[in-house]
Image: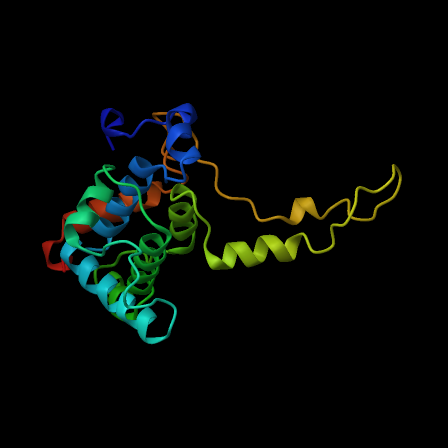
Length: 206
């Protein structure tokens, strides 16, 4: 990726948005766009998948029909991908999960095998998306609490009690901020590789 097209990678730049409960929207949107492009997920398809997931969450009682938790419209997806709009927790949860389901589907993995492409591991991309959203997945929330259940008080010098509990807290990915580094997007340079491969294969665009 041309370094001139990279989002701003100065932590200070995002402090205002983060203090107001917003995501690092340009970074999240940029990675969301690249992850979708790499797998041939057009914005219209993401809208369709997201609407279906939203409906299922209503049917399961997680969301009330009258709730306003963030639009799944293609126009909103476009604004988010272009860094023009922050996201709600519901949007992050639904979009990340439907993309994960697509990446992990048999159909997508079979396409990769037929085209002699490496089947991508979505896990690091999922973690990076949650980090860039300035939110945490339900799994990360539970994992963080469980990792600190043994912590009660600081031990006296020489005691080993509770000394390693903080080291077990799951660490969120820390993107490199070197503008010319392949890892300048939180170790997700592999998505650029998939993106380039899929762009050369129009039949993969869905």
